[in-house]
Image (cartoon, rainbow, N blue to C red; front, top):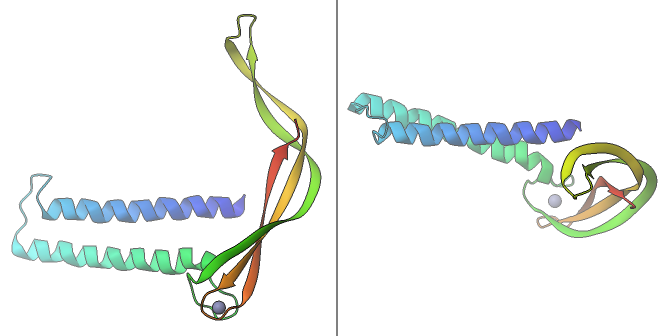
Length: 145
Ligand SMILES: [Zn+2]
């Protein structure tokens, strides 16, 4: 849950920065109707340059953190090698079911817990730089019905 929030935050920040850069380009090329003088254009280019640096830092450090080799600390060098099921446990899964009338039209939704399984996957990565292997895990709830 927590990491999911950070992933969404990261995506939102990335989109915001890209949007900002696009907006600055639009101002430089006068799409919003304003004409910039030479100094203002230079200022805009400087801001774009700074924003591109920010974008680079976000991608390299914030995204790179997820793809960093724990052995040699190089980023973006992990290659997915395989995925295997590491464990299964019984859980209740919340599902939304449509309630229908006699004509088959959906008249509402109903939430209910049904028996399910939490499957934990282990993913193996291999580093392209140093050849070390590392693992990450994630789990997914699936209904049995
Ligand atoms: Zn490595």
